[in-house]
Amino acid sequence: MLELVTAHLGAFVIEDHASGARGALIDCSYEVRGHSYMMAYMTPDPSDIDQMPRGGFRASCLDRLLETDRLEYLDRDDVDVSTKRQVIGALDWTGRFFKNHQRFAAIALDLVADVPDPRILELGAGHGGVSRQLLADHPTARVTITDLDRESVGRIAASDLGSHPRAEVRQMDATAIDAADGSYDLVLFALSFHHLAPAQAAQVFAEGTRVADTLLIIDLPRPPAPLHLLRLATMLPAALVLPFAHDGVISSLRSYSPSALRSLARHADPSIELTLRGGLTAPQIVIARRAP
Image (cartoon, rainbow, N blue to C red; front, side, top):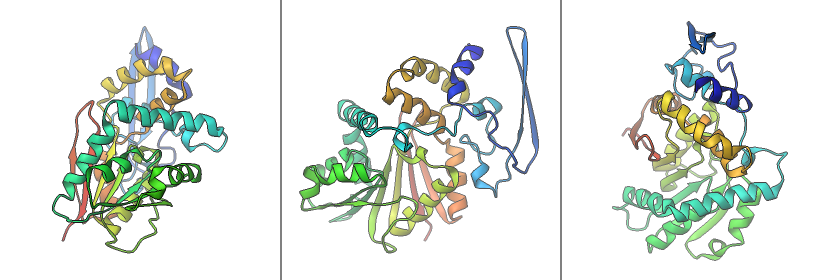
């Protein structure tokens, strides 16, 4: 099983995730069908956040295999717009069909339940479905809807959200938020955090907690390596033909573990306090606030 899946993952997984890193050498060996394999890793120095594995500094050897530097179609400049639209459309459809938009909006609004007219910033909004749900579920919330991709921003602006009286649509980088300190009550980043490399991801913690009282990140969970391997095995056949599934495999490989999330927040600012929720299959929920 391991031999089969790792062979198919060859197009997605990079073999050396800690090249040039400082730290202790880890030797890992295993045997499959009479063949012996050995992997050697340098455990990264915790101060070198960009060398951190997606599973965290103490990730197992197998977990280190289950990550990639390969980009999703949504992040590539050499992919045609129609393919990206297909992926975004599929994300919006699954969000509506499985009621993720409603679920994510409810989680966000619960965090600002004591604020009469909450100011909410959504980063990486993509299709705008969650922002639309926020506006529908709260009669006085003001939502700033942003994305890094100009095409996505234009598409959102041309929709009903572009003319909504309580919405503002802007192009914005999640790692360099164009807003003054304390401009918002809540920053929401849903199902996009895994797109970022560790140094960028740490910057989101710094920026999100700078411009808002609370940063809410909702993203894919990173299960223990054996379960992760099984999940990837079920996704791989479809990933060969469907753009949405292709990006789903890469998203899974790039997802961060709870340990990694704590390291990212600590690197951004030791005063940032995290509350982590979620399960093996449920979305991972991260609530970040700076200590008083």
